[in-house]
Image (cartoon, rainbow, N blue to C red; front, side, top):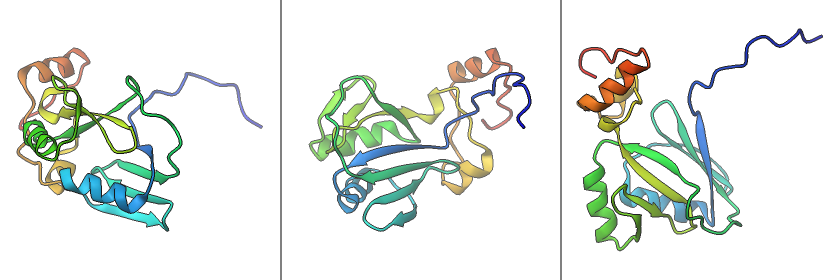
Length: 156
């Protein structure tokens, strides 16, 4: 018998984001053109899972929704400008050049966010495993963290 609810649970982060795509192999090939990643696993031709350190991106075959001008999610990278150059060279249309938003071939809008600029901390071990151990937070990001009572620590 469940007890009375106490405090509401806190949101601690995102474990994964699931994107609908038309074809898993095509989606993996598209994302591999622009990002280094480890394939966590597959479930036949219906699903694939891309590791994002301690989180993951799930790709699900069965695209059925139109592209969206506002709904999006942000992927954190260690080299936003390098990615911008790769996207432009490949002819991928940027939806918002200032923020570096683009649509994948299935209409999923993706915002690219540099790790250094945001109030988002990965454990040092996760960063090292991803080969991003040298990433450092900007002063503005460090101040945002401190305002929340989070001390980034040395090397962050």
